[in-house]
Amino acid sequence: HWELEFADLFKERGGFDLIVGNPPWIKMTWNEQGVLSEYNPMFSIKKLSASATSSLRNETLRNLNTEQEYTVSYSEQAGQISYYSAMSNYEVLSGQQANLYKCFLPQTWMFLSDIGTVGLLHPDGVYNDPKAESFRKQQYKRLIYHFQFRNEMKLFAEVANREVYSINVYSSKEKPYFWSISNLFYPTTIDECFDKGNTSPLKGS
Image (cartoon, rainbow, N blue to C red; front, side):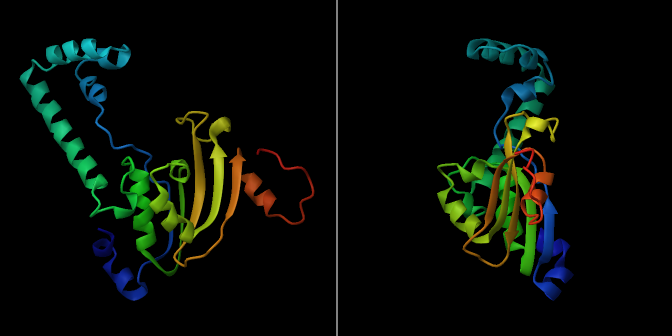
């Protein structure tokens, strides 16, 4: 509840002049095996078939406490998925798979002041998702810079090498153009691209 937490700021300035962040890259899906592995590690150790999963699930859930906790986990996850997928909450994301980072984008645009800028590091999926056309229409109006990275240099150690993500800078003022650099390995390459005095071959892209 940003407007409540920062009521004075919204009253005085109408929103934030600057927002910077790395929102969570979490798909909102029901991960049954992840939940059950808390009670029986075989769910995460072995690659189980559907029939083996069903049999082991029944065996694991025979414990009353386990069954209650499983039901609570399912109810919580189902509620979150319904909330983040509801058009009344995130209309611009309609039809897309719920992911927490996507939910941050329209929120940050909404809470910028008239002169505000937001910089977010997030996955690049919104740029090629066939179901995200209506979202991109809103995104491109605000986008100033799009710097796409491949994680070959393991800048994010916990993320796979082939993961594609980007640094994205948005403005509260709608503009018909933006700068884009793709297939980057190092952030320093961005500075070198915009250095008019640099005549050396660029590395890391």
